[in-house]
Length: 358
Image (tube, rainbow, N blue to C red; front, side, top):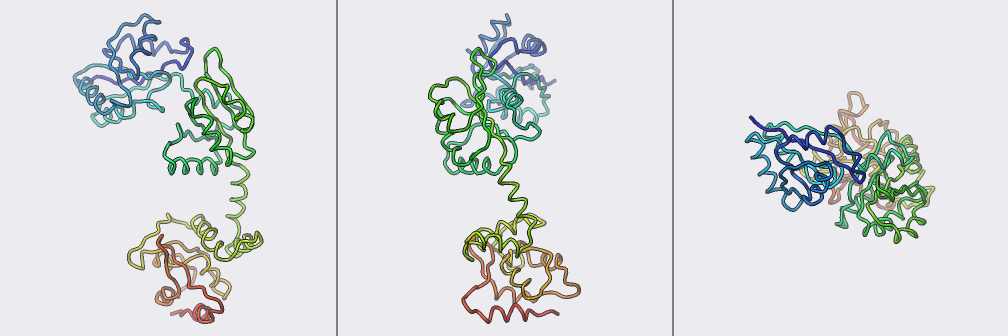
């Protein structure tokens, strides 16, 4: 009979935060898998618990997870703990939990302290919806993607960061946060626990003097998303005029703005492709705008296959000649189609007006 794997949350600072149930499990299990056996030993000694320990950390997770699974299959009960907080949340644990589930082994959570939740609930920022991003990636490309996600997100953002990297992270965030509220939680549940509610420039001035474990809680981007929602309610032509008034040239509107517009308005997943013509997005928003200006009534926007466009089109008992559409358009390396637009291209406009209805 298989043993059970207990995921035991431990205090993040104050040892009195451990639960009665956690102490009971730690006393009863056959083995304790710890991120740092030295740190866990201090906890066990404090509560007068004596149990065999095995190290389980990021650098040996693949090997040790197999050893733990073998022991569980032999009927041993194991408690998994991290240095502080809940295992698996930016701490080792995910790998052995996944393998245990695959092998049909019972996994039981023993709830307790979790730093991100404690920081969030006293931040004063919205708690109904939030994104926990853990530690920001070190890879420049991945880091930029995460920063873009933070910039656009309407939800409260929670970030973990090491003390020696906090300044560089704040500098990265400075350009995207603007006037959004930010809270820095430091040394949670410890003697020097502190919550700093200041703007990012003030935080940067103080950060060199701050020490200890830190968490950032960032307000969601309400202003930018409000503007985006308003744009979503505009028609295609109104959308074009909006950016035209901002001084953008025609090419920039077509390439940057209309593509994002079409993806937002599309009623099914947008997947640029390059194979056979009928599987590629075959028309761009500017092309549909030209159609609309020439009297064609369209209620659907552009991204998708030709077959989908036909089935979604409101043109009763009539359909476009694909050959004409294809000759009007070309595609770039992303699989997006654009019309051949040239100055005084009367042929283009004649074709649009003369698109055959059958």
